[in-house]
Length: 160
Image (cartoon, rainbow, N blue to C red):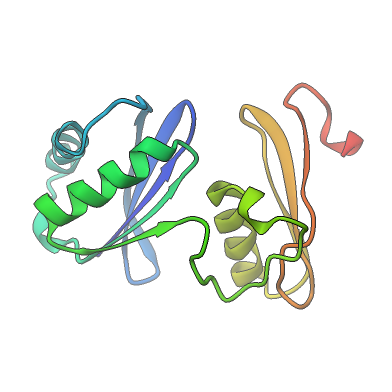
């Protein structure tokens, strides 16, 4: 099973996938000072509530916009899951070129959204989120991220 982790500034979302199918999902408040042990305890509790255990997890993918938590999820994976962990960030080869002036400025959340949208639709598309700011990231026909737009969450999407 794959444990997918999306660490946002306010909430952390977790999803467990078996093959292509989502088996279970949860979310909890992000706390930037959390340790790998604390995260393991919280996630083990969520697994237990769903009748699951860490035993079946063989891979973890982490997308984090909270830098201190990326390494804590890596520690959790190494110590408790004994699984491979891919942390999305600068230097990770995604298979999709990032065609902007400074690719290191693209957040992991926007990157995985753009890749997921392109993978799902297979053509030019725009992925967008709205918390805490509305963001739009295009996935052009040649599957690259070439621009991004941000606006306060209160603006209507048509303003983008």
